[in-house]
Length: 299
Image 1 (cartoon, helix red, strand yellow):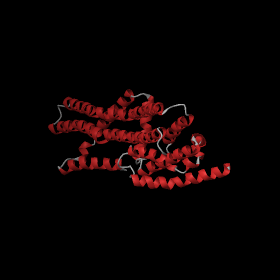
Image 2 (cartoon, helix red, strand yellow):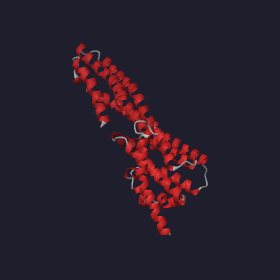
Image 3 (tube, helix red, strand yellow):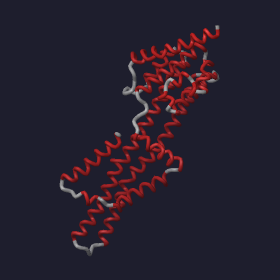
Image 4 (tube, helix red, strand yellow):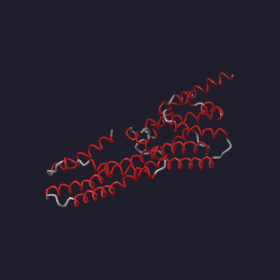
């Protein structure tokens, strides 16, 4: 929705201002200029990217129209799930988490958080490192190094579509100049026409420069910037989980571990200390009840 609103503001501002000073909007309609600039930009994108990069870009583009998944509510869910997993592991032993980690879809802990289950990457990141914690064969430093490697790889992968789109945006003003030069060449080749017609041809040629700059900085470059912002949000969620799990590995209690994670969250989504404490107190009851029931069954 914000993308549509932004594009509408760009178009209304540019063409509205042009119309206010008496410009004729019909003069800006030059299909040949669109074909030259758009076709050259798409061709350059295909040449400059391999098949994987092109598929990744086409896959990401539809997601840009959606709002951010990483809301305060999702972070609260993640903090609640982290607390429940770590508390259960602390009270019953890490092996008690084996079923939850191996089959999250049927786990009572995971299934209580549909927003988390809807994000496959988030579930995999959490379960993979919980699995390593259960194995007990890696210390905190080794797991932290592995997390850093995975996060860096994720950043590099998500940068590919943004970089490819930004490259196209950088090239469009130059392609606009190409279109304008070709239009001027056409106008000069028609120098025997009346002055009015020759002036119209030159004006049409200048539209190419205008379109190239407008498409680049009004449409394409903002999309590349939005891609990078969404990538940063995904990385921040991974860093939040990383801080929580590492603090638990270093011996901190679950309630303190989630506080470590809370501190890594962007201020726009970060819950206050009191909010997180109350939420943890709320999710703590099911864990304590489950522990009592299992103890009674064993007895």
